[in-house]
Length: 73
Image 1 (tube, rainbow, N blue to C red):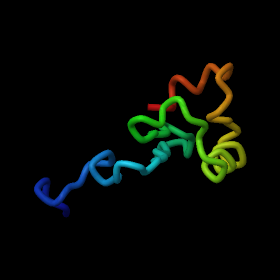
Image 2: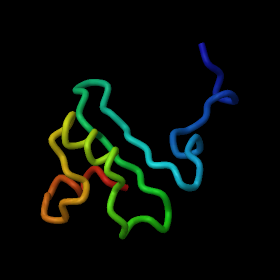
Image 3: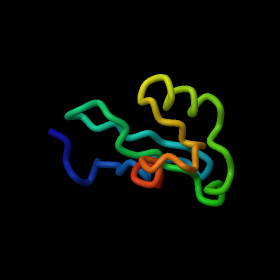
């Protein structure tokens, strides 16, 4: 069993320019897309967009999609 002093939180494991996906273990749905600080107004890179569209049916660059505000942090 892992001890708390060895645990690295998700956000702590990301470098300054990393994007991150969190997938809900219960359902396999996209739970969160983390965007690097300062990149919030930029388009999400094409590869990440393709993953989100192909697997989850969500376009993170679609500002009119109401689910985006719930998953992008």
